[in-house]
Length: 175
Image (tube, rainbow, N blue to C red):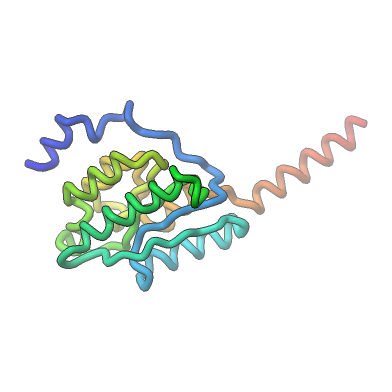
């Protein structure tokens, strides 16, 4: 019922999606401060792109009132970005896997509308591969896992250094 209504209103339309930066330097993360999802995101970013600055917006990700807190944090991150107080390039909204009931907060209208209204590009990285929430459909892009969300917005620095080495060798040969 809600999914159909939001779809008819255009919240899932691809033409309203923003491009996601692939080498974000400033990343906002809306998730539980104590959950594995945050640790996964931080681990991937430390490995791939250690210079990336991460701004954490801690929220409960399940239980009564969690949807309102998630929506509030999305709005707060977006507001701080739009006002110039934080230079967030992309916002990851995340939690680890669980039962459909555990992930339900990401199927709430208040979260969907906060994601849709955000001016900052958003990545929904909720659950595992097979889990698809309304938040996934509304966000600018869906990542199948929290780790995949971090990979989507970061550049592998080792890969970049290898490319620079190859370019340097090629340039030396040309000279």
